[in-house]
Length: 105
Image 1 (tube, rainbow, N blue to C red):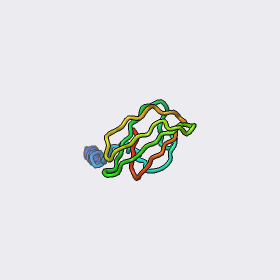
Image 2: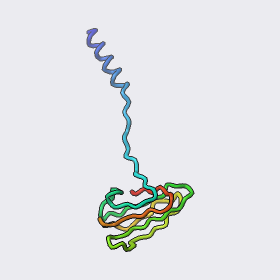
Image 3: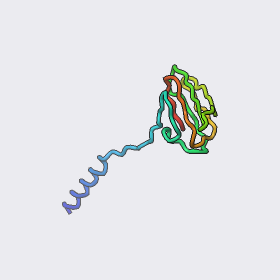
Image 4: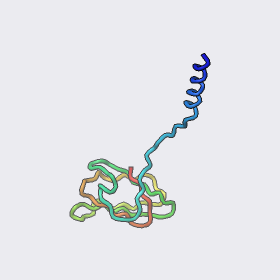
C-alpha cells in the first residue's frame, strides 16, 4: 500500500508540474521589396487582406501580372485596418514600397 501511495503521489506531482504552452502561428510580416506569390506563401484565387503594422509610415502595394501590367495599386495608411485585395493569380508579383510592415491574412 505504501508503494501505491508513493507512486501515485509522484505521478500527480509530475502531472501538475508540466506546463502546457499553446502554440499560435505568428503572422508573417513583410517589409519593402519585391516578392512573388511563392515568397509570400499566398494561394491562387483567394481573397486576402493586407494590413500595415507601422504606426507612422504609409505604404504602397503594387501588384503586377506576368506581363508587368499593374493589376492593383493600393495605398496603405499607417496603422491601417485590414484592406481587401482582389483574388490573385499564381504569376503575380508584388512590390512593397516604403519602410512599412505588411501582413497578409
